[in-house]
Image 1 (cartoon, one colour):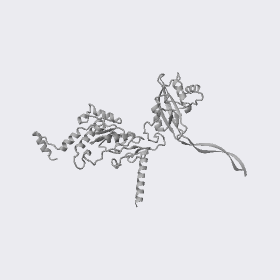
Image 2 (cartoon, chains in turn green, red; image 1 turned 90 degrees about the horizontal axis):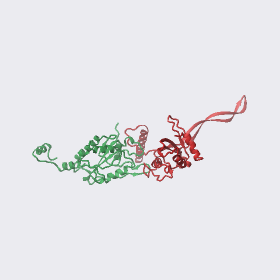
Image 3 (tube, one colour; image 1 turned 30 degrees about the vertical axis):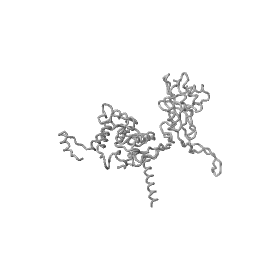
Image 4 (cartoon, chains in turn orange, brown; image 1 turned 45 degrees about the horizontal axis):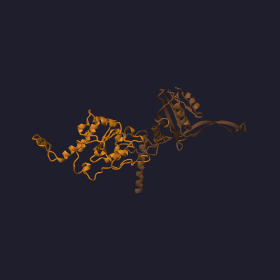
Length: 204
Length: 228
């Protein structure tokens, strides 16, 4: 911000490393995103493959899958969210500490996918919690998950630490918990959280 | 393995008055099934399992069928006496007319079980049971005490079709939550109206999405009217 890129490189050649708090802070944050260890359906298999040696998510600092929402930064919604499971997913999200991020992985998690008209399938988890990155695919390949991960890293890297668009954990006003839907007699109540999801406009 | 006719005969010899009916399957597989009466179901099932020759020791699949109320129209020949003028004279003449009559065949719920014998290596024997109706008399005897593998499948049938299995050790919903009231696999089940966003709607979904839009438009018009 204060130092221009050319000068930075020039100083680097002289053995002087110049940075800003914001850059350093975001660099640290984006390279230690620990996902929560949970899977919902077949996308979870692809997620597991992403963490193994061939795709090796550890390269991005995300190798530590935490089995507790308290220690996790990233929730990968890997698979179909049934209406029976949705309240638990939202509750787990609420239990995560800020900063927290969500990747909706695969057709089911983003829209209900092939099961969209099923009697027990939620038409996208973004109806209840804010989603940072959506990946289509059925299931998405590990490369797609890595791409989503890099997209999230880029998003984190670009966040200013003050003012508009700052991370939620630095904003006392920001909403961190979202209402858990109640399992009603015919459907989840409410059918979506107001403020999180609005009906997208279809452009034809 | 015995044919269904032989099995039927064997059951009726062992359990007098069991009332087994053969439901023919007209397809190539010819996999006919046996409809048993709920009153004798446990006795018949025990016989099928314990009979030395059949020894159907494994229930591989239990599922449900919903038969909704059906309106059938059939042609009936009716003979009645009509007054007619024949050769200038009024006479009573018997006349036969064909009339189309409509009647409602009451629906029911049905379970279908596929039985195999692991020890003998034969099967399947298909047995069916019908409830009295679809509304208040939906009890059927549970086969879980005879075949343990029926437990979760009967819970699923209870959940999705609403058949109540008497004698089941733990009859709770399996897939839906406990507070849920409907039975999604019934023919007359209507999904909740969450068709607000259907970018690629077609067929039934398109109809539901259009209905949803019409309802929203109606509500908006109503509010405007109230405001003015």
